[in-house]
Image 1 (cartoon, helix red, strand yellow):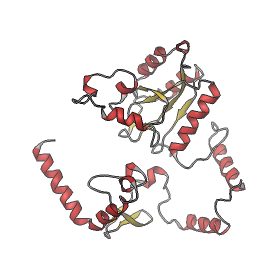
Image 2 (image 1 turned 180 degrees about the vertical axis):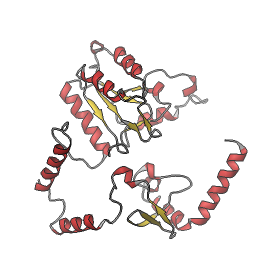
Image 3 (image 1 turned 90 degrees about the vertical axis):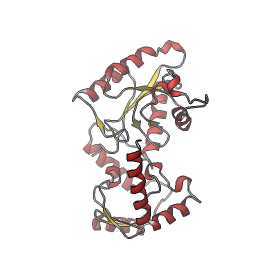
Image 4 (image 1 turned 60 degrees about the horizontal axis):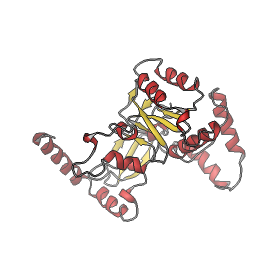
Length: 278
């Protein structure tokens, strides 16, 4: 970062801090009980995030009284905005009948049926509490279904599939066993990508290049079922790299090509996205 850019950044950060003292106090209080002061790392930014106090419609208000237009929409889950009267009435009615019964409820089967009716490719539904949990269960199911219990999982550089399934740009060499001097710290310690790998779920991942079918073919060719490690068990792919900068496929048939490549080899194919889900 050049001196000029650094100076401009420092000035902007100073203005932000001066305008948001209550958010800073809330953040400092939160760090005493929550790692990083939050429950989801993506919510943090330097020097500290705004503390939201309320929301209505498309308007957010923070602890310092500022109003903001919500263009995030809870990563596409909040399509109806905040405090929608129809949704509030339904939630109030449901809460009056009790919450978390510890047993099945007719409403969950009704919702699953509505999802099946809308998406013919979905045969059955398992509800989860987060995208992270959904993908962990999907990988476990794929390995159980194929019998490739120690099989590798193909993912894509820049992909994000949950808090323990993060594959930032620059991590490919670490996962594919191609570490060079540029990935190692000068003191011989581990690079940030190796540290991030340790924080991920303990599957054996291979990282392909998004929008490059040849890189997928190369990874498949490099793995043999005769290697004694069960070959490839599954693939995780985002139709759009949300966390990776909103990158979309560079051709209309890319997604279908990757899907066909894996299905022809009987590899379970898992398409996962939040920003592109609607």
